Amino acid sequence: MKWIDYATPGSVQEAVALLAEHGDRARIMAGGTDVLVQLRAGRLGLDLLVDGKNIPELNELSFDGQKGLTLGAAVPCYRIYGNADVKAHYGGIVDATSIIGGVLIQGRASVGGNLCNAAPSADSIPVLIALGATCNIAGSGGTRQLPVEEFCTGPGTNALRSGEMLVSVSVPAPAANSGATYMRFIPRNEMDIAVAGAGVSVLLENGTFKSAKVALSAVAPTPLFVKEAGDALTGQPVNEASIQKAAEIARDAARPITDMRGTIEYRKHLCEVLTRRTLNIAVDRAKEAR
Image (cartoon, rainbow, N blue to C red; front, side, top):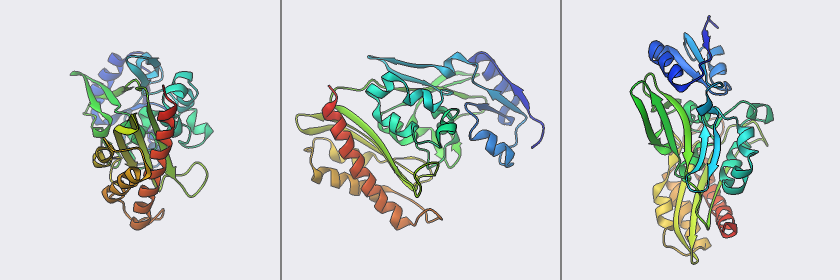
């Protein structure tokens, strides 16, 4: 690995100035569990690594009953799933962050880094899409917001422009009678990459689905928001027939490839099964949420 400069700015403004100066030859490090591996493997050519761990906004983890949840881009997984407010209100986020890598990885890896790495199999992204989360981005031209479902643009690529950085992710406050879940299938019990995954959220009202969202992982070039599956549930009774229809829509929307982890047919089948299971769990959680 060639010589790389290392900077530890204390503010978003300092970090943005460094990124603007070095352009595509600089990269923010949230936890380092992806970027350091890519540097060692020669997949990235950088002159500067900008550590975000000393920037307050990147380390914010806060919840407000009206505004919702703020996840700083560098907050490690163990802090997220161990947080009392996250446990109480965002079961789907606990599902996802508690299975990224192993315990040691979770001490460093962050949701922000998972987003910026933009792997199609990323575990945290589908449930963020299902929860309607928004990316908060800063650059030399100011700040902007972008829905999570628009952030990943291809395998390993994202919507950040040159000189920009992801500061945090905002997740809306959960409504009463709502629930969310993430589930994946892997060959091993831990530290594996998803063959397929599904993240869902539901909002119930008088025995019907008031709204729902479904997103999939590892079955398209990016984490896949299947809007049609959620729309098919809206206004429908909360029963197995409604859920099965949505699961079939998710299956048909998947665009997987055949690789060493599974065939196209197998992955599509998994999308149906996982969507059905996650919707049932989310419904149970919504019935308990008051």
